[in-house]
Length: 192
Image 1 (cartoon, rainbow, N blue to C red):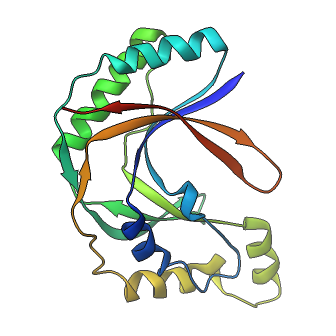
Image 2 (cartoon, helix red, strand yellow):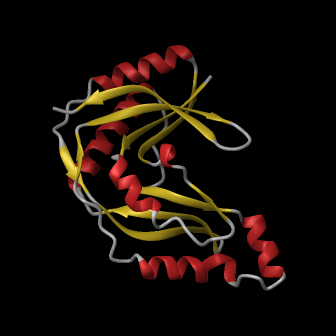
């Protein structure tokens, strides 16, 4: 079985910029540079035949090159606990159009419709909730790092990347290991 997802890569200079934001949260598991990407669709596990069929369907997508900009910081929470710290993407209709085309192809293949609304972002950190609970219990850091994240967001709230040219998207595989996921670029699909 192969675990797959569809992404847009970001340039090294943009990774340099957003790496400067990755400081100061004791319970953060920071995203490494080689794992920074903009996920368009998580697919999950498929077998070898399905993998080839998905790649073939994605290769049929015709779309024009466009540009994006990263902008703003935020968090995802579950039951009031901050789990993910991210940098967002400036509103961009072309990005949403490309994502919808990818979604249609994957549904055509037989995947269920993605129920979560597409929210383009790049994950900067995942927060270790067990560590947060220990810290809260002993009053080391209040309110599951919301103060630290709030300070980071306030400090970098005007962040806006340079324009990023999107001239291709990619199909990646992901292998889970105890330390981190290992990503491998399987296919690239050029935009015209």
